[in-house]
Amino acid sequence: MKKMMIYFLALSIVIIGTQASGGTSEERVKSKAKKVADQITELRSERAASLLDADMKITPDLFKSVCGPVKKKAMEIAKKEGLKIRHAAIKNRNPAHEATEEDVKLHDFFSSNPDKKGLWEKVTLKDRNFVKYSRPVYVEKACLNCHGEKEKRPEFIKKKYPRDKAYGFKVGHLRGIIQVMVPISE
Image 1: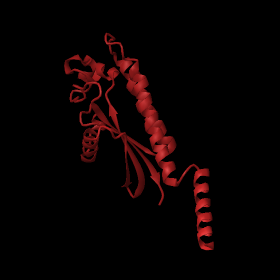
Image 2 (image 1 turned 90 degrees about the vertical axis):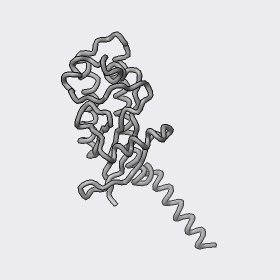
Image 3 (image 1 turned 45 degrees about the vertical axis):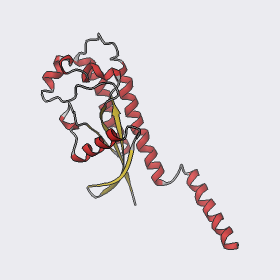
Image 4 (image 1 turned 135 degrees about the vertical axis):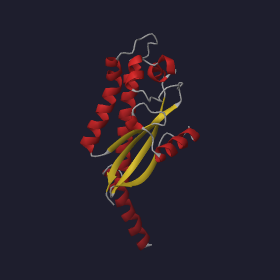
């Protein structure tokens, strides 16, 4: 009985200590990854909402004002927080976001499991361990001005991205994947 009381007392201290410090180390890492993915996803949606007017002419400056801040914010967060952020798509516009074999598997996973909002994995890159949070990015109505019908894409996009594959989407289609990788120490 005494051993059992000591066990429960020790367990209580661990639980209380974990709660007081904001959860376990892994929980804090996961929370951080999810929070960063939320920030980037929300910013993308906010910026794209400025394109909701179907008759709006999409200019290079307007395009930059939507996509540029998302990329800039992701780069700022990655540098400040010491983590890695990657956008990937099978139907990519920017060659830097072309899906790898692993990204294609994630895309297939989210396509086959539309109820899944994210996927957690532990990965090792260049001898560093990370917790990787992958989240699907779905097409919103505002995205269709640049990612809808192939013929309706703005001319400057057609010229700047001659190998563009990021068109033909409809609202709700899986557009790509965002991945946030937070370093962990084990």
